[in-house]
Image 1: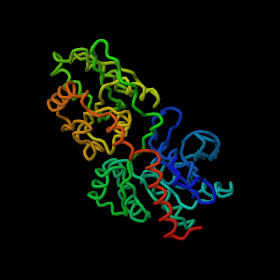
Image 2: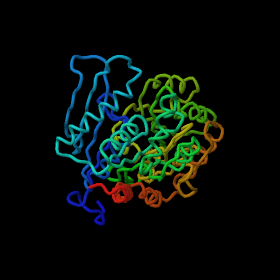
Image 3: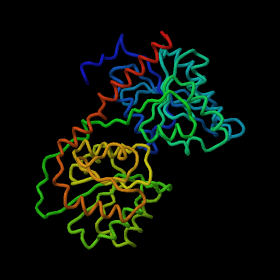
Length: 393
């Protein structure tokens, strides 16, 4: 940890984080970006997590569970929905208020509330702020089309965003989209974080058989947003030139079998290794075995895996989305248009003959502004400024 940052204690803030989604035991990747941001700052500030949830069956109406998760006190609370499930937001907010009062009784008085996602956690933070006279900030991870998709959300979210002391967008692209959607707020841009103790360059690969390995990390969800269709089409266009090429595909989801069949139909299955879900440490190991990284997404608000690949020193080929739009220059890799198989194919061909020319130390260095230390320095400034301006004690 950077010595210029004060260790947790008398100078640290009491921060209550309310995530809109969080890992639930079923999906270990759910809310992982939020969890990593918490890990980045937990040694400087006294951070506790409140994750309100609702349910529709069972005998008890309210559960309040306090436990230690990754050395962070976490409150998982459950409130039974009585009546119309469509009113789950009301129950989520009620759960947050009930839980907050119990957290105060537990001896933890927050200086600031940090909501991740404007809905539903930003709405809950707004209510708590009004009731308990405490400032709140929001980190938004999702584009407006997702968070504003119902009349109720369109009615509630703008005011929650406007009243927040600070609204953090995880990329310039996302900030532009939020502003264009008429979500007025006090915006700052602060990207996701990379754990540089996990993602780092490996030893120079000894290549006995002239093999070339690439890696992509893609959750295979039903929205097909990771652009695997265009990647497989791109590979099919150049498959006669893919000598000793292997693509590591990391990720799981409902459409994994669908994409495996697609790769067979397009004649590129032999170039692919489907690895399924991998822990972060395993992803980093596969990155270190690779020569370059591919991100073929149709859309990304950010694209943290791109930053993780850079931390491993990998040159990248990416569609012009998320972080790649602003960060990837000719020293770091190649940027192509999204949803364009031909453009992606040409980019891969170029990378196949140039990946060894990139300076991996410089690529790693470019990723350092996404480190835990860099993130925590910026969050420390935001927390202190907000609390000072609001005068909470």
